[in-house]
Amino acid sequence: MGLLTLALSQAPALAGTFAITGGQWFDGQDFRADHWYIDSRGTFTKRKPENIDHVIDASGKYLLPPFADAHNHNLQNAWGVNNFGPLQQKSGIYYLAQMCDFGEGLRAQFAGAETLDVRYSSDCISASDGHPLGLILAGESGEATEAVLVKAREQFLPVDDPEQLDRAWQKVLAHKPDFIKVVLIASEKFDERHGAADYRGINGIDPDLVPEIVARARRLGVPVVAHVDTARDAAVAIEAGVEVLAHLPGYRIAKNEGFAKGDYLIDNETIVRAAKQGTKLIATASVPGEHGRYSADELAEIQEIQKLNLSRLQAAGVPLLMGSDNVFGTVLSEINYLDALGIADRSALLRSLTMDTPQWLFPQRRLGRFSEGAEGSFLMLAGNPLENLDFLGKIEIGVKQGHVMTTAGN
Image (cartoon, rainbow, N blue to C red):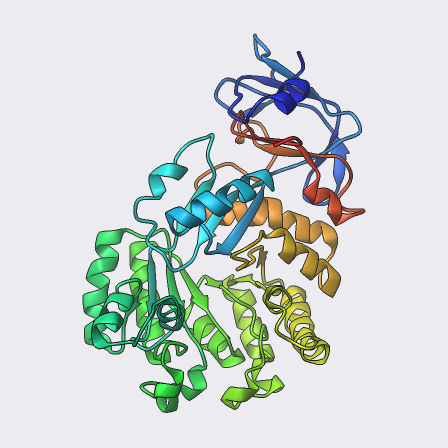
């Protein structure tokens, strides 16, 4: 019985050696005719294995590496794993990063060839009155007493001065994080906002502390991802040498906080510096559209800034990683949103989703590619996503390291 027929009638977990005949395979630019085997180690090869367990006839189908989401939060606790893990797997999103969470008790669930691969930021550094404190307190009932605040701050690393950074860094050393997230919000107004009751929970860290955090992380060999809001936040992060921006400035225009549209437009000097030092961008551009709280005029104003920033960053050669920050959905919302903005060729967006982002998440592994000895992972689509992105949601079969993860009937 052929694998495709078998997989449609059984739950995922089927494994073995594969022959994938025919089909059009994505090479980063276009789909081209090819064929591959997956051997008993779960890797791609052109050498036919002695025994073939399953044959996939991919004639008329389109194959590309599995998807990745470099910025989400919905696998950060057991409830999220149970409610959103199946959605990610069904959608072909096998590689994910969870921002601002230690992943305690969860990492062991994502440690196999037959599971999703999830990385946790582990250490999220912000001001003691900074984001994500506001989100944490929003989930609490009753008054935010000192005891409640102390407990809430245990969910991130609050740092207000060099001495607190020294203490927090001992936890970083103990946690051995996958990467560190530092929160910058309204850096240009830090002095007036820090400690003010109106801004409790939505501030960012003192921008003067960021260079030292990056320097310490670099000595550990751990990348720093910066949550940024305004253009000044992006400039602070890039000047400090962070590896990745976790947001594109302009996902909101906080007029109620005294900001104007121009405060979110990244200056040319910052863009040139980002490109020169290899800073990457996770745009999460679809956030305003997903939240649905903006009028048509407000969304148009936001999108104007997004297009200006993204087009200039793309022209300068700043690499784009795919990430959604879509807690209740998937990264497919992000690629569709970016495609509608028209800031990059569709092939570049697909390359980010299937190649660049997984390779950034797992730099020591050979994934996100079709080559001899690379991990035997792919998605087979019913049609060409370069012609219609809707086909990204029409997965007929998905395989990760020689294990069936996704089928059309699952």
